Length: 168
Image (cartoon, rainbow, N blue to C red):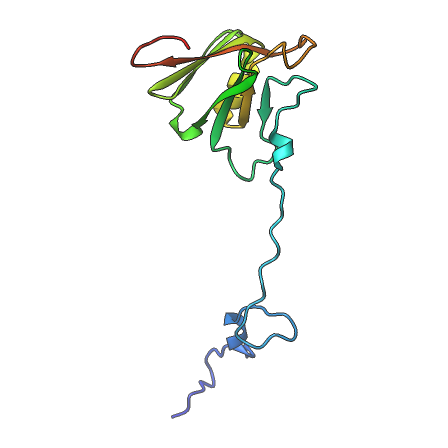
């Protein structure tokens, strides 16, 4: 009995069928070794891109590259008595609620900690925080920025602790 069917269907000659299971390789590499992956693109912004600009006040710093989501939300305020920045870095996954009153007040609820942000033009900040694109929120300090900002401004960042419900 023959393997070939004279009246039946025959598959086309597939050539080297093992080649479709091999990894592509560059010339000069021995078989069985795959080509190295392409170099990773360094599209993440550097530290200088995320640092606050002390010449022009920006109330918040928005993440430029969306390939990786922002993991932490940093809140910074200037302490005039010590001359140092005070700040908090809170994880976005711990943000339970974003509440706002018009464009002048914003409340961020992180469970045991709550932050109240006061200022003007905060409706855009609320939208960016809800999208998870804000990396840093900066409180305006006249000791740092001499010129009064024209547009949006964060006038105060206050921490409210749940156990004692006091503003700090």
